[in-house]
Image 1 (cartoon, rainbow, N blue to C red):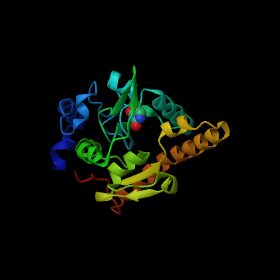
Image 2 (cartoon, rainbow, N blue to C red; image 1 turned 120 degrees about the horizontal axis):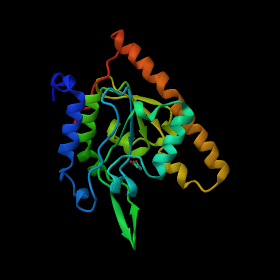
Image 3 (spheres, rainbow, N blue to C red; image 1 turned 90 degrees about the vertical axis):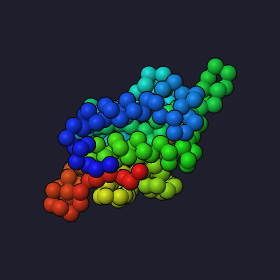
Image 4 (cartoon, helix red, strand yellow; image 1 turned 90 degrees about the horizontal axis):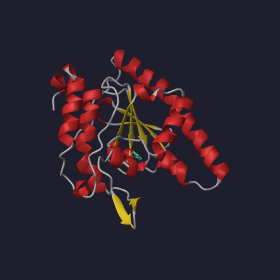
Length: 223
Ligand code: URA
């Protein structure tokens, strides 16, 4: 896709992508999910957050990060001084993958093929928005963005330069914090998460300066 057409009406372009994605049947995950959960946020956002896939609540409401992990993300963003209203939030995979267990729907991690197939939507979101910085929340997002498995613990806080000058910051997924049982461990992991988030505005500004001086330009990831 050329960037020129997409640039003129980014909001319209995002709306039409969102609409197109509602009928995506490219992988089998649509069959059991309630709906496609597309990204949300301003089309001129400088920072994009990418999660794994919608959870139970997101699947029902049709919006990303509105369940327990989303509430924790909101809290951490607020503590880090990042306004959620100014960032674009999306997922690497746009349908909820789960296993029915009685009345409950248990989250199942998307596999490499599902991540790869769904990448077309994230790539187009990126192409429209041109974020200065993308924050990969956890391993699935990192894999979708960097196109290979990235161990999160040993790479968190690191920046990966992917295609066309895009910069990807790796951090943990907020669900990982919710799974920690030890209170002290959870407190310390949460503090590190907030610290990662504190760096995003600074990193995005640095990327904007570099792009302006022609050193680096934010672009798109290949589909
Ligand atoms: N976890 C994610 O990765 N994304 C959501 O939207 C919700 C939970």
